[in-house]
Image 1 (cartoon, rainbow, N blue to C red):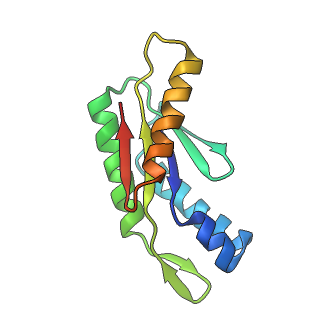
Image 2: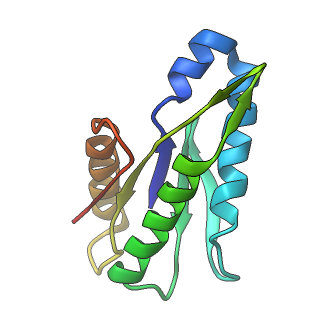
Length: 125
C-alpha cells in the first residue's frame, strides 16, 4: 500500500517545509495506530509512505486502507494558528508470484491514479 496526503504540497507552499513535515509526522502516527505486529511502515518517497501488510488478503487490506483514510480525513492538523484538513490517496495491490518490480510498478500506478481524485481515494487492482 502506498499512502500520501493530497494537501501536502499546498501546505509546503503556504506554510513551509517544517510545518508540512509536522503534518506528515501526524500522518505517520495515524497510520501506526492501524498496524499489527508484523506490519511495516516506511517512507517510500519524500511524501509517500509504503505500508506492508503480510498475511493479509486484499479484502482485509482494503478495510485497513479505508480506516486509515477515514482517520486522516477526520483528523485536525494544526498548522500555525489554523486547522487544516487532509485527504489520503492510497494505491493498493496484493503481492503475487509476479516479479517484485512489476508489483511495485502496478502499485505506483494505482497510487498515481488515487492522487488524481479530489477526495480520499483507494485504487486497487
